[in-house]
Length: 132
Image (cartoon, rainbow, N blue to C red):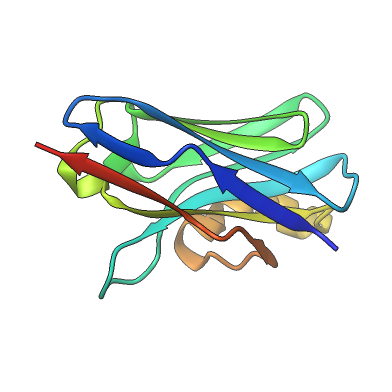
């Protein structure tokens, strides 16, 4: 059974940085489609960044609102989100989602999950709060 466990959330001031982690367990995999999403109360879940890869070849995609500030990465069955220059509008619960060993079609179309968020596995979420 695949489990995703997030960590690294917290409270920071405007301009600060945080690194979120999402540890995947329960299945070995060589190709993946994974992503970070966020949600605030009363709003729909928003895609932040996706990464799809096989071996050392990866493709990264970002929402316009975080380009140049956030970096998604993956290593040793752990997904990361490095967040710099945090702003109050980044305040949300952040979730990681994953499709491990997706079909080739799903792998190529991974970036569509920025909008669709159609991934089979999800973490429990971690709160990020940015105050001015």
